[in-house]
Length: 166
Image (cartoon, rainbow, N blue to C red; front, top):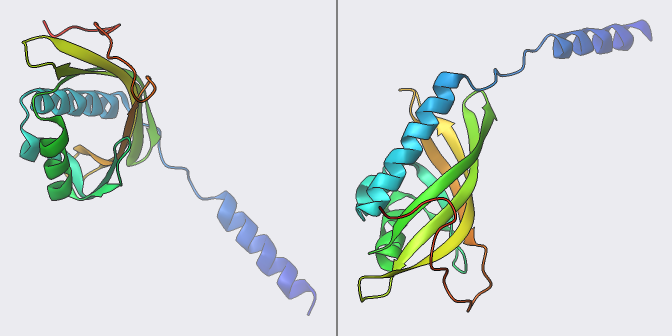
């Protein structure tokens, strides 16, 4: 009787050891994610919130600073329209990594906020996205968190350290 649990345990260990890990992201995956990020910035800069929301999974979560979690495409589009209309953005992707059909994108951002006189203040910050590959090969945002480098109440910057509106 004592040998049976031993052999079952040995069999389970062997099966576990034979499992393969998901593959690392390919260069094609990274390129597709980079292109999707460029499309995100273009639609943001056009303030096309419905198209921007379509770049998220249907059940996506967005975690903006000083706000509750925003859930789902319609809520994301509404939050953007209510809070960021007229804004522009530039970003600097610093890392894309992942395994299988899940990836993360980490980077810096500059949000150009209009003053009303034609000039902009710049909020320099950072972001982290979790993306999921879809059946058609696209990479949609499943979770997005972003925030400012500046303390609340701080003055906006006059320029972005890595981009401009030109």
